[in-house]
Image (spheres, rainbow, N blue to C red):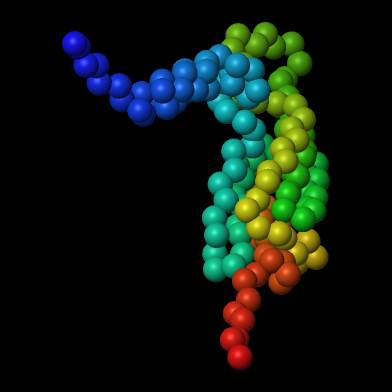
Length: 141
């Protein structure tokens, strides 16, 4: 009689490999530009609040629209790239056109307290956390 050892986790590892292969496929490339989503965004937590930093080189701040609702923030705008009359473009890598990104955040926001600063192509969004969303200490009696 031959006894075979069956690894109970092999099915899970096989599923994990299949998912990783699927997620690494080309379907993701159709959702973003070759450089990644525009504008690139980093979000940091400072105490209870969040800070979002966006790279927006060449974007006029008057074209920016920022909206906040509950735990999402939407940033839209337009980046214009102009060329002198009578030139032929041999290579175009600079991203131009309209953009619209909605970002889901891990906390509820206080929209009335949000502030934005734009300088040298960098947009900083200060995103205060809603008082209703902050943890509370409960005293046991």
